[in-house]
Length: 343
Ligand code: ADP
Ligand code: IOM
Image (cartoon, rainbow, N blue to C red; front, side, top):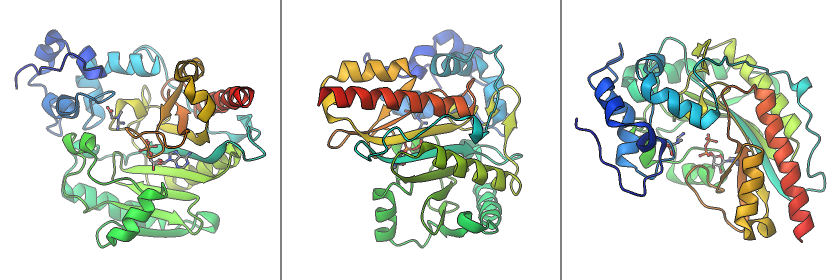
């Protein structure tokens, strides 16, 4: 492979940090799963509108390709290679009274963590057999959960297109055919090995074998962020006792995209901010001050509809789960105050 060319308006972290020197130093390097630099960068090369553009095939990718991954990790999370990641999943330390008790702004709250299974390659480097084995193990573990976490696993294979569409539209299921994941090799053998677990109320869900092998999700209507976090923590602990998670002392939970390392947690609200959005610069400045990310209402790479946005913590590595959720809470409090002031 030759050094890739990027369009002049490319803003991805890949085109920012893949210098010809870094490329020359890393080309030809392979992990023990046979994962190459070409595979790691293909998503960003084929999709210059990526925000990041790189994926890891295994934990070893983060070590062997550190000359590319480390500066991306530092630019995204503010986490220096000499820093240490810490975890704190104690809901008692989160100070999160509902920022919108009247239900005027926050439509729903969702907190998810990414997890992968210890001892397997990550999705971009996994084989079909390994992926199917993970599905079997994870689904079997999930189906032993009890009380409000009890539910059923629904494989994508055999799901009717109408059910699939409705689950996606209602924000419960991942979309199909994402071109960023496609280029990363994450859609191979689709739909085999993929599926969704959910409890009766769809307040606890697990995506199986999407960008990560598990996306563990707690969600509900309204702005009771503390309740959503408490349920998430219970679910994560229950799953961890059934399926061992891939983790590194330095980078926390290992994920296929470097934006998700560490806590692998994204705590978000769907929130109506139509007035503030008219002054988009001010909206962005408040979000930047609180390290928040703005997404549209159908997830990453989607647009807002009717002034409703998905607002979440941007940093996931070098902050604890409690700190990441706290950043979101504090930012949302300020966003609501500003919206009230403007109307
Ligand atoms: P991820 O959160 O796993 O990184 P996406 O950004 O693609 O992935 O979002 C996945 C789905 O979750 C999308 O349908 C998105 O609209 C939905 N979602 C995210 N935050 C919320 C929320 N607070 N309330 C309801 N749905 C949400
Ligand atoms: N997490 C991943 N889907 N994303 C950061 C893709 C991108 O590079 O835009």
